[in-house]
Figure 1 (cartoon, rainbow, N blue to C red):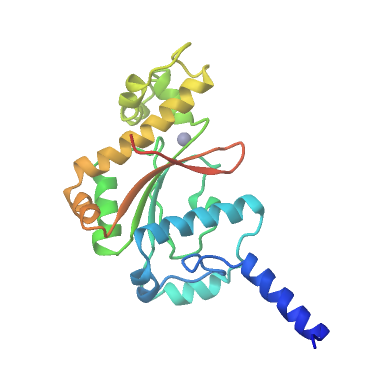
Figure 2 (tube, rainbow, N blue to C red):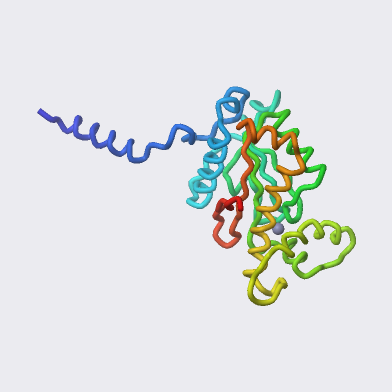
Length: 236
Ligand SMILES: [Zn+2]
């Protein structure tokens, strides 16, 4: 005879299975330790970031005790990922991926390109500190990309923007090739991400070796400033 309690228990099990999250996606915030970092694959690190962006989009971010995370991470850090992003105030990676203290290395530079110093920082993050994923995160409506599209010259910014110029030249599109053409700007930003991913592999034998051995993955992604959504950029 089926009791109400049994039926309720059965319903709960069905609901639980419907809402079950894959094993690689943590159901609550976990402060990274040597053990949790070692247990992650590069794909699991990527899945954790994309799941975090889903929480950000849905307004279901984890509640974190940052003070507790300070004490847990005080003796050492074991971040799972490196996210190279723009300085744009609308794209703070810890927020848009719902990450806490000790979760990600976060190099930022206008136009999210790489130079020797940023490559060195990425080599530290992966080869020395054990991170499994490098993500290059561009974004729509990027002021640095717009500046590069318009050949803006201003002090040291001229040199900064010259790093984005190859993506400007490589971008084919109908219509004006300046910042007034939003489609052009966003396509340049997209190409800049893909070219930066390739630059990392070409200019860092250390990282290329880690990718070859399967210890690290390098991916590109775009953040839409009007929606908050991150979309992976296919490697061309
Ligand atoms: Zn930007």
